Image (cartoon, rainbow, N blue to C red; front, top):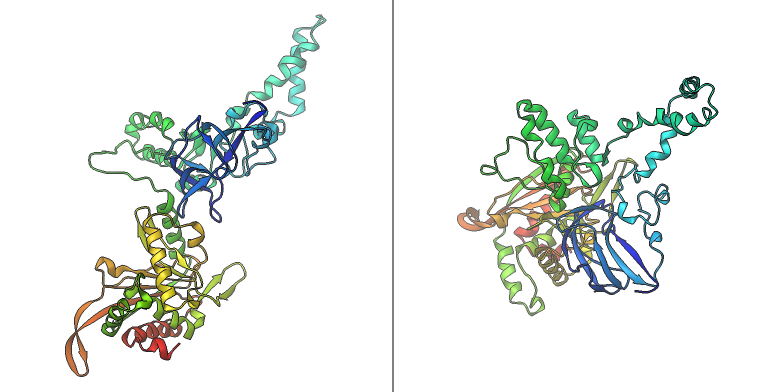
Length: 484
């Protein structure tokens, strides 16, 4: 192509606050022609699977990472040759290190190294070296020694200036260089008492990974197997995202699954929730026979034709009614400002189990929806989640959540709060049980509800009122009208 340049397309932040994403599938290969807006790959973030479109026309010249690789946001993932485009060096600076990137020559884009938060590219270390060199007095003594040996020779003064003087301070700089590692990996090493300088890096560009730290710990715990423990480092170079197993690992007896993407984010969120918000869980067992009859009637209603009508729809509506009667339950705790933030809207989260792990998309402004509108939103939410197409925005901004553990035959549970929310309602299995009804023991449709709440902003009285209101609506669905 004439008057062409190569532009680098970087991994974007497709969701608020994301730092990395895994490349699930490439839809193009080197040599393919792409157009502005064409989807070139699918990536999985900590929140969802997302398709990435290319923002310009051109020909694919290189795919920088294979499928299955986790890439930091701001790192170039594909090179495209465009006609009459901006010079290649305009695309080069990484978003996380604009101050140090210009030091790299524009004609060497292939030499780029992974950019770590707070470190920039490798060239930044050379700018700090002059501050670490030996004192001027020591350098002067070294120069004087060389001059005394060459006394009487005309070239003596020039020789030390060109060779001896810079050589002395340059030698100790190699061991002084700080190992490359992301902040979470540094924290992990600190918590485990591992010196990163002693860890053999296997990540791209010599980056120390979490697996490297764990391997170092395993090697220290089993010193007699030090030699075999070093063997996994060779294949790790070609597959940096696969964890290196301990030396004693027997693949015939165990299966190791990398923790990443949605599952990794869920684990971090649940740990943060469990150790940040003081959880309290209350339970109530309720006769929902009338609710089940109403579900069957709504399925025959023309207004609900083609919509998903099930007990979860009426449970969601019952919770929305309870929140309207007790609005203080719909709040969050602002630690920085030391304030309770009461929300005047309800973004109702629905926990969904997917092949990629548990996700919690939410229905925006659920409080303002009619029952048919709520049914349509629920149906769309569930089908999108099952297809793995839930967008990051659909999982942001939730205020309260429902988790339906009853679909697995479980009676109830003690759910953990979705981070940033004050309450979550767990719904148990609905099944026939002996129940006292109108003075007689009869088989009735019964379920158990469990409400977990943040005790910093929800006291026992408020939590009990909300749970009692939900139960009352499900026992007598006509309250959906009288309490509206």
